[in-house]
Image (cartoon, rainbow, N blue to C red; front, side, top):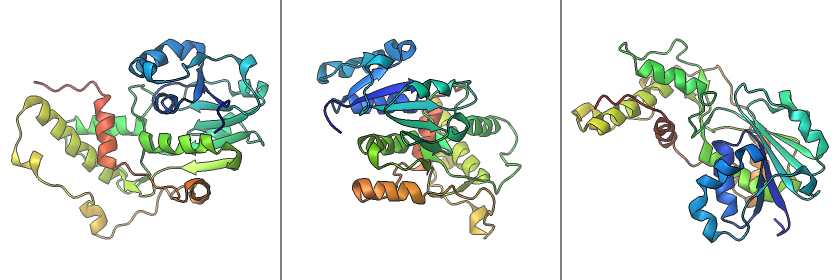
Length: 277
């Protein structure tokens, strides 16, 4: 990335956007953030401000140059006016769970379709699937999924952020549309089993009362898969494009590194749980 290039943050500045923002400013990348999120974004990185060369600025469309990169974030069902992108003449990446509903790709606009990302955010419109699973874990009945074999391609916010930072640095190489998700599929029942395990351990840790089951090593692969009942539902999104892009960027292809259990612990940390301590 050239020294003069600026990265502009628009749309939903929480979770993923905040993580990318906090990472790239430490690389002394010039950034701007839309006015309504500027103060909160600066507050969250206040401890890092003395170590950075370029303090982020409030976003202004008039200060955007053609070589800049604009990141437009949209998750959940929030109403967003994507037509604002029409006024920009720079490199644009739209990051969304349904980017093609917001905008059609053009030469300067790239779409990153994010599937099954585990957000590290307390926003109610994030992690709606996991919230429904957590509600089951908090009930008194055995945790059994209605559609046990439905697959989810969970990927951590950290892995998506790390990927996007590389894409920003190589925006000229990007194709029009890319999918991103985890490489390994997890059935609903597997996801529930992992979430319930971590939820129970979280409660035990808060109360200080552990039993043998809380501390026992638990396998990642459930008996459901071991029995040979492999899901044919929810095929994995096509990762060949992001694979090729990442190989061109760093020779490593798309390789998410954060385990599901780690991502789920980050998810649980965003929740106001009733620990009953």
